[in-house]
Image 1 (cartoon, one colour):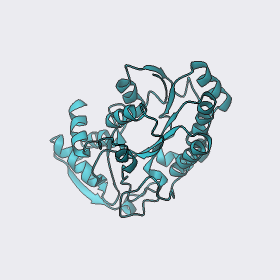
Image 2 (tube, helix red, strand yellow):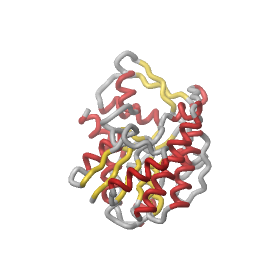
Image 3 (spheres, rainbow, N blue to C red):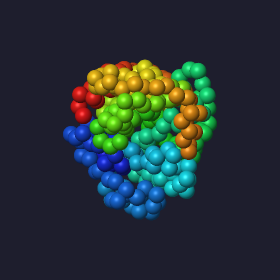
Image 4 (cartoon, rainbow, N blue to C red):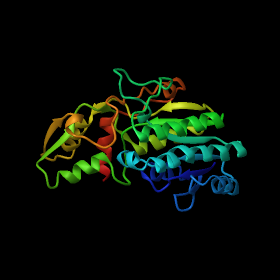
Length: 277
């Protein structure tokens, strides 16, 4: 299979290249393929003529999106739309990576794929715009919403916690945001399975289980055998430019309905991650 990957040098893109290394990969970054340029994107994809496109390119700086909203909507909204147009012309599927931030976070139960979207941040709104554009343009698409990603390549919450612990004996972490930490390697494996099918649609794909950022940080330090006093704080005590969803647990219903095995528990995944870094 000939696979074009956008954002291939990012955290997920790097793992996708590794997991799909036996396929023919066309890896691109923002320098070789600016997905916000419609004509260039269409011509580029036509020239390379892939069997499928995986879009892992995004503007993911959640706080940065608040102050750079035009850029957020260009990359996260217009970019996926341009890719969808190109895929439609070639009659090939598009895999698009989306986010739990398309939901409000006001919930007590895991979010289903067909639940009403209501993003509360520019990042979430721009990612939802990308989803809508794809659905309007294509029939052959996999929209994958995931959450709390971390991986071996690039900055992530676990790495930030480990770095902070080098110079701090006490760290404050929010305890009222709930979600599922997801290892990009596990997500890449899931994507490699999904693209072998024609089970098109919207999917929630995360590791199993859930926790707060506070719980997750405590687990990281325990597994890494690091003695740090972790203090729970509320979101209100730790203000950020962009609002965060309070409850981001995603029910992986469509994944399970299509007889795919649930991804392993987040505790098992973070344990492996810490052994690898």
